[in-house]
Length: 154
Figure 1 (spheres, rainbow, N blue to C red):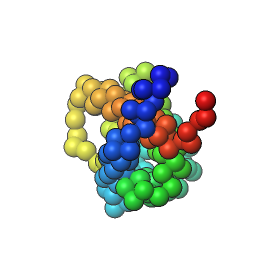
Figure 2: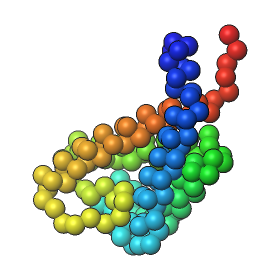
Figure 3: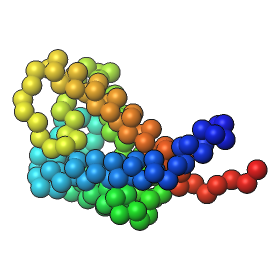
């Protein structure tokens, strides 16, 4: 990567904005799921990728992980660890959505709580947008991780 681009990507104001944006997105995603674990368990089950015995533990743990990571980013603590966890979560969400898109199996993302009933075509279109949104959020994670990495000596 060119030094000028690397320097621009490590800009402290850009990093602050990215940190707060990612943190707020994950806080907003966590709160509805914390408030309704059964609905989130049902959303996870709809993906048909997780064994039944893992549904409830995942529905209870994942939203709290999202909340802790989101708060860490907003507060500026454990930034690198929170960024790595958020990137891992985004990769797994993107993979789950992509697998179901490949199967043409429409699911409601479950990202921000329960959604209204929609047609199959609407849900598939929403899944495509969710994959794109998650890819964008992954780029933000990449910026955050690049900026939080120790500078290398030439």
